[in-house]
Length: 88
Image 1 (tube, rainbow, N blue to C red):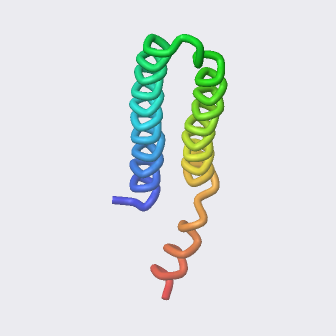
Image 2 (tube, rainbow, N blue to C red):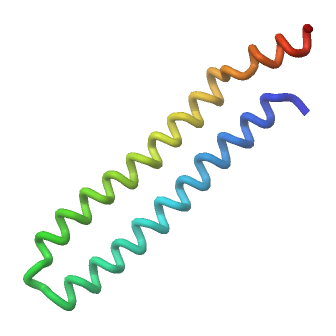
């Protein structure tokens, strides 16, 4: 099996697991926000601001992972190492 197939598999895993983790995290946080705003409606504005900041951070981590995976898929730095090892 060639190295590029492992790179494609790794990129798919990075993107897939990052998306699953981000969706689960945002879903749990959204549920807790709904519970907290139902218990104390006067805190809803403050909690909503904090929730949106955290959603942005969670999405940023997923998008950075997607960027790294796509970078590996298009400009793989490990292919040069493999050609050196196989030639030597």
